[in-house]
Length: 515
Image (cartoon, rainbow, N blue to C red; front, side):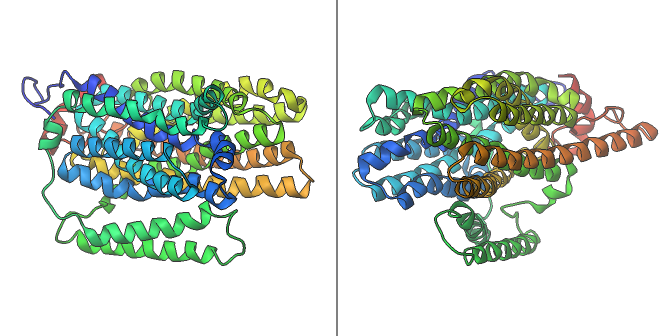
């Protein structure tokens, strides 16, 4: 962060918005590949004679590697410089995309997808870390709003873009262009990163141990937790859930190790973060919401393509209302979240609930072949609500995190989101497929029951948001009763960024809200 020239020692870097645009390009690529491949799976099966297990790994291998690298990569960026880590991640992602497009066998493609996912896990925590480093106050909210819009658009528009590419290039070779499209974009992002991301983003770095034992324990725990969830359909029997129990035990060992390590060095994950209500509840809310948010598109795309025999392009077009609503509201929610606080997220979750209930009613009342049109309006409402959840929650969750640890803190937050997504897909998918099998192929019934499970995850998220709203207001009343500083009378808002010393925070706290 540059200093000088301002009463509080802070001067915004003039390149910060251009730097953000470069970061968002990299983030868009990585998050787009979470969903774009779904509509290409039939073409991949035909082109590479891929088995069901191979197709499962094309999707799950990416998600597993993505979630595995988030926290260690965030730590690496904090230590070695976030610009360097971002460029390295984009370069690896670009090369892996080219390798995936050139794949001559299913195994080749699976390996390329795993490397792609690892690169995505390197890229994403650097983006939240750079936002923490380059922006402050209301500008930080706007920056996270743009990131939230990118998350919403990339996730929802992935099936549409994949459908367009397959439609244009043909079923036989169209799936390759789902990966090739990343190559020129990645090359441009690398060139622009060195031009627009300030050099001081690499100069301000921690000089400390990488905490290798913590890295291994966290990696092993995440793998053991995610594997049975991702492979729930592919692995028959109940013994796979022993891996989940083992993973939780390893993660408990990770927590114990980090507490011990913190006595003499800076741990990979600062467990004191979870003593902050904003971070603890925000991370839990993100986990619960992504369990429902991601599963929506998983079952909706399957319902349209396998149940109603939509083409890949038609299925992609059906997701556009959600993408448009999410992009529009995210650009609005980011700037105002510092004034409204967690109440804005509760409002967004309420809209998501209304929209998803509307989708369920539309599927029940409207003939199947017209479901793509009937669900457009409720998906638009749900998308508007979602845009008021993802970016504002990230802004509030990271508001009190010191900039020095922003990369690893963002990595922990996104790891929770990836675990939530895996849990949601496993649970919702199990309900979806079970109902289809029991009903003799009634995809609408399976979709509606799966949708109610996603609604349950959203309700859980809303409860967490309301708990935080209530706690914030109680804290605000306490500050009114005994005001001690310029932020004491501010209701239901995040605290000033914790990247300031106690003295500086006392001077600049009100400026954070007035910016």
